[in-house]
Image 1 (cartoon, rainbow, N blue to C red):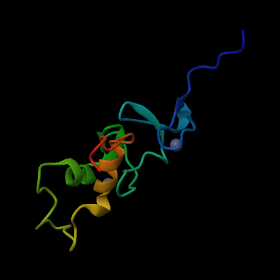
Image 2: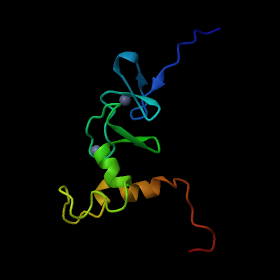
Image 3: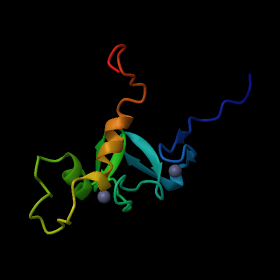
Length: 109
Ligand SMILES: [Zn+2]
Ligand SMILES: [Zn+2]
């Protein structure tokens, strides 16, 4: 029998093993502290400030802006930027990454 190492969690972000000394629990997974950052603004997160969505982690602010009730954080908010239509939040990318294997049905082109 080969030596079977104890189960090592791999960081969802960098895919490297996460050891107890550097682990942060979030979204049901273990992350490196350095990797446990908001998927949008890259702010470092803590297990108490994280909001998760489909396995990715965000700070509460970005989560609210991206997934919150329609209109929340947009238009009239203190952080409202001109031309802020959500592109910088990666909404397009998310829409695409949700369907990695999407193919147009035959006959639709
Ligand atoms: Zn990592
Ligand atoms: Zn953020």
